[in-house]
Length: 309
Image 1 (tube, rainbow, N blue to C red):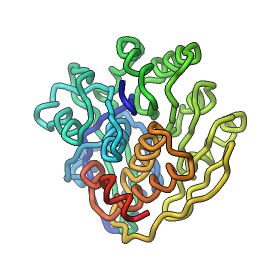
Image 2: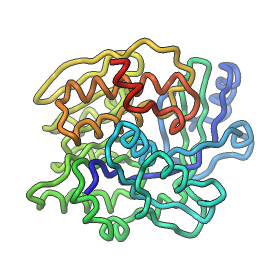
Image 3: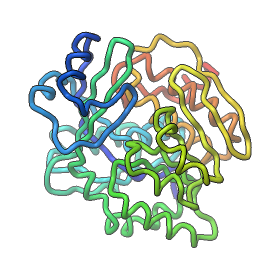
């Protein structure tokens, strides 16, 4: 039995740190380019843009949140799929090196999922994702790993894998006498309405842009809503309502800060922390992660986070 199970995506990230003029030129050239802080799913990325994003690292919201939960001290498993390039990019090994159990990750034909990330001078990121092997995390895969999910204390979900398997899972969990606490990060926001409105979901963690898009779907949500707002205080609404401000940091890259927040939040909730303590710990971890480049390498450990609270 794991404290946290993250069911979701893993990607090879292609990152470019660009000045504001270069970003403005890309915005003029590509009308589909995400807004700052936004993640969008795309069917292809032009070669000219790929060439601008030359730094490689591991990412994917499911894997990032699993790494964050493990770094927070939780016994964590990641459920997802990698492609034929797993050994080339050390995808499974890289996630597992952070203490995450990757024994139930599937290996499928084709490439691992990928993300193309533009980081501007203000450290804001724009992310376009290609599904790759993440498309294989379907209903059959989810059904075959059901026991692992059911026995967890906390389940982390995002919106970078096929929706059919996730909604089947949530429907099934409604019949369990003691289901895991279900935490949903609705990103990419497009098509995430069935997740945030599902009765099996306990916690929804959108950023402020996602919250604005999902306001209608969230109107009937009866759980705990945790809205992250970059350097501004996190807003919590539900049975308890409060705000928690992040510590002041010198941010150089905000990519994955929301994943760090969500992973730390799940880890704390899985071990019985109250919401105030869990959010305070999560917002501290997320803020500290922005002081380094990349996502998984920048996740602070529990000792570092707890020393800053």
